[in-house]
Length: 131
Image (cartoon, rainbow, N blue to C red):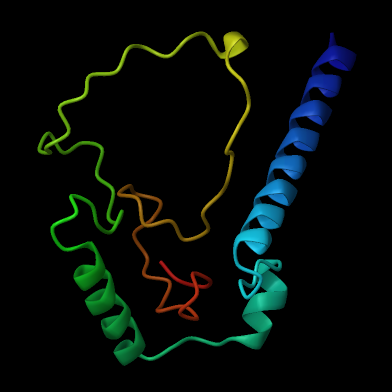
């Protein structure tokens, strides 16, 4: 039984690795100027940006999404009962019937929860070292 479990874990890790590689390849093919290198390599080049840079980014985001029905994803509060999406979703199928896709991790994620209560700083203006 342990060999089967180990094999399943190895397969999942391989799929995650493949997904990450595919995501990077897609991002690079869509815009070669995108820096999709590893966080450590990227963050060693870029340091934290000023509050002014963050304010400008927020202003541009508000301007570019005004009246479009969407905007920033943060902070995410799944306990909130308010919203305008009237789509009702069915229950998900059993995990054994689903395909593995889009697994990713967020360091310093902005989601509401007890484990994300410490401000991580402005970051580098490109999504790294922030939250």
